[in-house]
Amino acid sequence: MSEQTSASNRIESTQNETAILPPVDVIEDSVGITLYADLPGVPKEKLNLQIESDTLILEGEVALDFPKGMEANHVEVSLPSYRRIFTLSKELDANKAVAEFEQGVLKLRIPKADHAKARKVEIKVM
Image 1 (spheres, rainbow, N blue to C red):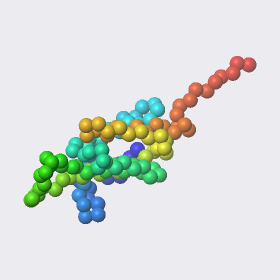
Image 2 (cartoon, rainbow, N blue to C red; image 1 turned 135 degrees about the vertical axis):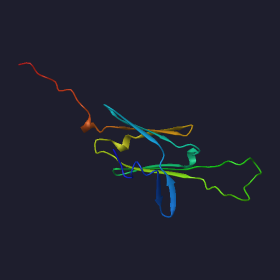
Image 3 (cartoon, rainbow, N blue to C red; image 1 turned 120 degrees about the horizontal axis):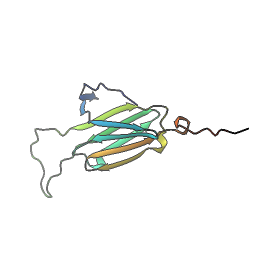
Image 4 (tube, helix red, strand yellow; image 1 turned 90 degrees about the vertical axis):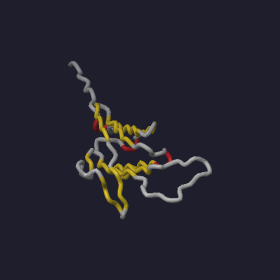
């Protein structure tokens, strides 16, 4: 898996909109990868996770909840949005990806494709 944006570039501009690159940890084991992304302030309904061909797109918008009956009259601070794009290895089976989201942390598990898994070869004694 490789990232399509520079790791040193913490902000990405897309379509006149600025997005923050969320911090991400990617852990690989013998059966796949697990990606953890920190998305503080993003509710589940504002989180978008897409896999198109070999591209993983992670997007989320921070939501500010106002107490019932209140609304903002003047806002000087814009709420950030997160965006990160990765290129997935052909060894991963994106069709079997499973995502969980809890307390602002996204956990995405993508297993290896069957052709990429190590397999034991039976030895016949003659």
